[in-house]
Length: 157
Image (cartoon, rainbow, N blue to C red; front, side, top):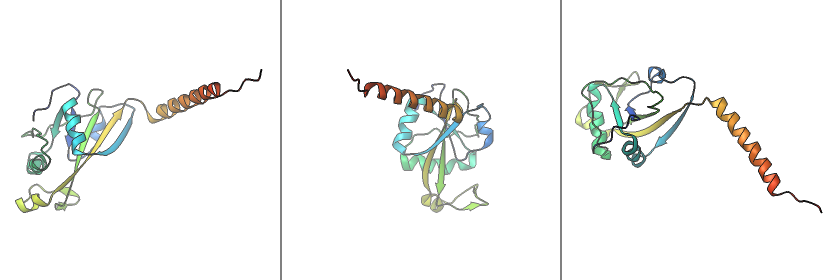
């Protein structure tokens, strides 16, 4: 499957680091676990850029085979920073494989790769800070209450 180039691609990687977030100023990050079907639709709409170390390729190939994602896996690590255009990051959580000090190993046997399972977490960066969103929500709630009071008023004649 070939995903589009939109200028607003979703990044996909096996971890999340602070350096990925330095391209965004003040804002709010939402996090949600997502399904493979959701990912396919997201990638169809925005495109996807895979960021992984070359030694992690077999893990991503296994994921591609398992879920028929059709990701193009680069031969070299593509570093990125989230920005105003690129606001979405999907982190692939890998379970069922050995780790060293919490990190994935540089290689796995075919048997170990067969034991790997994957879940997906989408991070989305909003340009508004959480405090601004709370204030905006409070203002909208008050306006709604005023509208409801007006609609439900009882006039005595």
